[in-house]
Length: 144
Image (cartoon, rainbow, N blue to C red):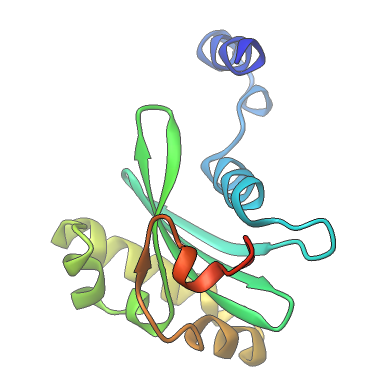
């Protein structure tokens, strides 16, 4: 807790960009802290951000999907995990994302995923449900 407070103070007063973790790094850390296993780490990329929402593609072993996150205060929170539904406006709107933010996220996600190998994109789409916190339904023993 003290380290986090010092980091935030450094970020607020630092004149160089490297002093503060980017939203992408923060999001990867949150997902890793929640779902990494000693023998099976979560590989999180790409990450796209629009306002206080983000979508992150993830794989863990042979599984994969996308996570919708929301920034609450200074912390990113995983709101739900899904697959192809998180590439559709209706899925984001149903999750409570505003229309303008949803459109920005979808445009950024489409662009970011163009550079992703097809096999990885298929794993993102293979997550066949929309599951919210605490993710117990699809994580089993703390795994994605």
